[in-house]
Image (cartoon, rainbow, N blue to C red):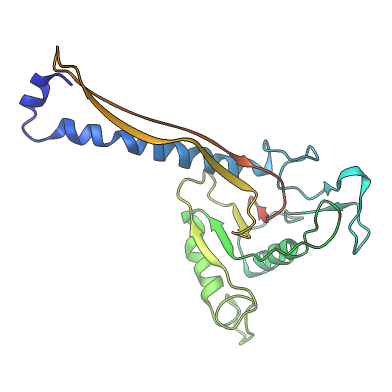
Length: 220
């Protein structure tokens, strides 16, 4: 901005605009990371060449599941379905039974349900209900105060899908974000022209390392 611009900025509009610059970094980071999560059903692939969320993952070097002898394993519902107590239970069991690359059980503790705002009301009914929701029985549900599973609901407004949902072990998530250069914001003044310049920037790497540590479905 020129000095004249700032002098004539009676209501501080230009200063407010400059303060919006750092928000562009936040928006970019959220957009990239949300895109990485949403693409696990299609374009983001793992070491086996399959999409990160798939029903037919393989073990490297011809290994098998050390417990069942199976050659493949899944971190996606066999039939993609809408959010329900049954689908969440299936994902919980699926995640708890994941094996290492060598085929042995791994210590995963599913604790987070990641989902878009569209699914938050229904998810809250499922995970906070003392009894089996959406039924007329008094059965204790798998989730909620009396259930065996405890999940933290994480609403992510940046998810491009309105139907997908994902269960994660928050301490062993395969999704990563590394700052190569942390966000910065600079203000400079050219003393000859008295023009003020505002700049911001950042560098980061984001993605997913492998298909273990989560189970998901694009929904229905």
